[in-house]
Length: 523
Image (cartoon, rainbow, N blue to C red):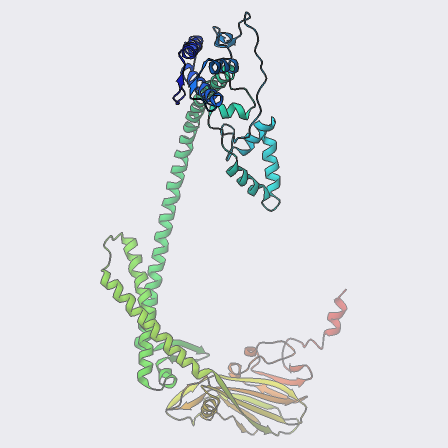
């Protein structure tokens, strides 16, 4: 009975059989009859086990206890509609329920059924417990921890008896039957709901099909646009890579890295001429050039090749060994170039400066003419540099003073001072003309270490100078009243004032002469 074996007296057995057969007849033809009968037998077995105590045989008193607690089967006769109807000829039983027991409710759960079980135990809607746990969760997660603890210690209501006890109902024939029929009704409602949902899904699927088709066509159009954009981009990359490769090869072969045009003069700069002055030996310079060429050319070549493969839709991939060899050569060139560049940069960590002054005495009314020209007495061999700057400033002295600062870098301070002495640059004074060489030279065998020449011409206040054409390339941020650019200052007379140089023969009046007019226009 109910999965348990019992030894029962014959009279008790006959009475129990009559009782169960009567229950089966009353349930015959009703929905869920077999399941109801199985749960009834489980409940009868539980009552037998409770009443036996230490006895081994079930007697007539035990069967009487079952009938008393479960109720007479004639009370629950099914009418035509399937609802339970009480026999008016039978006396009414006690409908009082038993004590409630706390279980987790698996039929009303979101996570573990804790709130559903608490609601059934307390007889209130579980939503209030869920709300309480949610509020407690805001307090440093207390609600979550408490929920997990209750989830662990509270058992789930798995059997019919446990579910009835959770609701405080007596596990008799009526309640067992009502519980099972409620479940069957819920299943039927779910099936009807599923049918409605199926119709809804079919409608949604039809709408989704239209949307899917529209989106598919849209994405196809976007894909074609992106494909065209990628091909255009690949074409640009291919052309750019080809031009860059041609430039790198041309620079390596010819040595030309820049062309400077100043007026009628054109200077072509050959970087190979610097290599002998940068490194300790010509061989190191050539290795540096090779590493630089490989470092620049290999990525450009790879970009060009892949762009052409994409544009021409070439499916054949290059040889694996060719790719690995190219990558290995590029990494070797990168490491070698980095090492040589770092070693070279150490030669530019210390600096040294040498200063010289030249006093120029002229009659008070005689202007000083500033002229630039190419030197005639430079050595035939050496590195020619043009890093020369001239600033024009006021002095409180009554004479012109030219200050020349020669600067150089080196690995050590003594090394920088040694390179400083290799600078050959000397302005000359002829009558009232101050002549500046437009370049200077470091001799053959010397090393280039950012040698430069910076000069200051100190002009007494009230004295006049004339800046000849070509001097614009030497001037560096000269302060003047008219705020003219350095390149605009040549070809004019200038007089030194307490605010800087002021143009004497400029068509634009000095701000100091019309300052009152400007001020009068201000509100």
